[in-house]
Image (tube, rainbow, N blue to C red; front, side, top):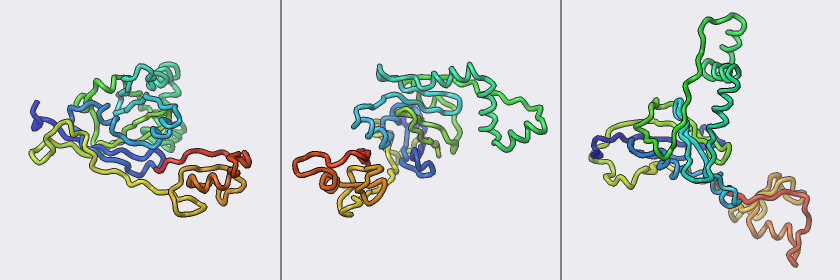
Length: 245
């Protein structure tokens, strides 16, 4: 198919913790697979887990009632399976939670008090392979919030903000897509001691640290916590590698 017959989607990825903050924005072709987008999503959780040797290749994108599971890696886990098991084994609980989601908690309480003949139904959820699924294969609503889940429980909202036909002014090379059009600037956390260099360590419940948690550059961390012979001066604290968001 010629590019001019393809659709171009503008897709926003939001921060996992600061959920109101847009982290990235891409232009994606409608005939691209969801894994082509996933492979370009940048999240600090992936970097932390890779450095710790605990990277999990599993993940899914939930669009409307379709769980798109990334099972390319042989060690990947189907994250949607326990959800389907819960839906199958706890139908009443699942229906109650679904009604709260679509109508709000207040309306649900009013329904319990006053009664409501309307019977809600759960969507007919299904699962597909992410690497075999293209955006043009899915039904979606522009501006709606969808879910990207990875590394166990790291969640991002995905919004398909806009959709249009490909036109001559677009980048013609399909291999260039997804095209990154926005990247949230990293926040630089400086060392709490010298206030000059970037932090590389963060300690918690550290009795000699000026703050809790406390951020250190490598030099200040070792000066405070180690003797000249390289032995640790005290152990009553927790320390982690710090990755700038």
